[in-house]
Image (cartoon, rainbow, N blue to C red; front, side, top):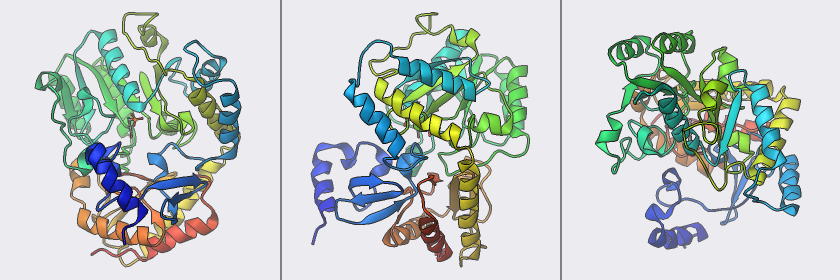
Length: 420
Ligand code: PLP
């Protein structure tokens, strides 16, 4: 007998491309549909409870329907949810983001991480008067033209890292370097003098997590500065995920511009770009680089974001706890039949088991993972009641809402991990 999810997916396929609103959700043969979510649990319309390690791909560090954020949203609803005028909430959130990031002196709120990176790239070009950008192979910065070249995330999962419909005239201005390869960056910048910016996820999050090697980010900072190239840290995943101040504070590296999203909206749509004020003053209406949006700074996202960041600031010990929890999962993997065959990568509350003998250093190595073995593991894990992101190339997340019992259930699933 068909499940309610299967029925819905059949209907969805007739009215939505691939039956979904975003590609990676199109899990074969059909995705489960969620009826509600609370804490670390998703409840499907078929009545199954799943421990969620996807957490909407990162925003929900406090879990689903976290009461203080829920209350902030409910309170704001009483006062209306969209004004088209400035509201006090955006000033509050801007001040908090600036307090937490020494590199950010001014910030602009937009509605998604994609918009944030698109605007940051335009701003870098407007500020420097240069045309090219450099991105890292396998880095994902959203679904817009300049960055859909060797893009990670769903683009790699579905085998379309280079999207159709993007003008070759445009992507010739997008240059690529491998992650963790300083020589390649130096060589590229030494031979190209029209580069406005390097955009990089400081810890790669969209090809599974890949960690920077010792001093890599510091050296990236020195090389870009020496070549007069702006450094954009895309912290849409890492912002408030790796700690207050994200990867830049954790690694002690100061980018010129930063893009944020996900956690800073507390689960509501958001993006932000910010940085040095001499650069940010180029943004309209202060300056000539245009950026605008109906939903920019909308009071609901601002309020949910402010409640989330305030809670994180007041409870910073959670970062250490989350780190211990992913360490427990790592130990479980090492105990498993697959422990010595694959590799485990984690930092704070992000983690992944790669079906590959050593942790990948870059895109090419990550793509050598055995995706068939991943799929079998993923299916078994779902059967045991745990929802991991459905791709070898997406990062797993933990939240503060995961209970000890749930962490133990996740560890148990990993303890029985087989490489087959
Ligand atoms: N940048 C990074 C590092 C991301 O991981 C993502 C999305 O996953 C984006 C940008 C795009 O953000 P959004 O999906 O909010 O447009």
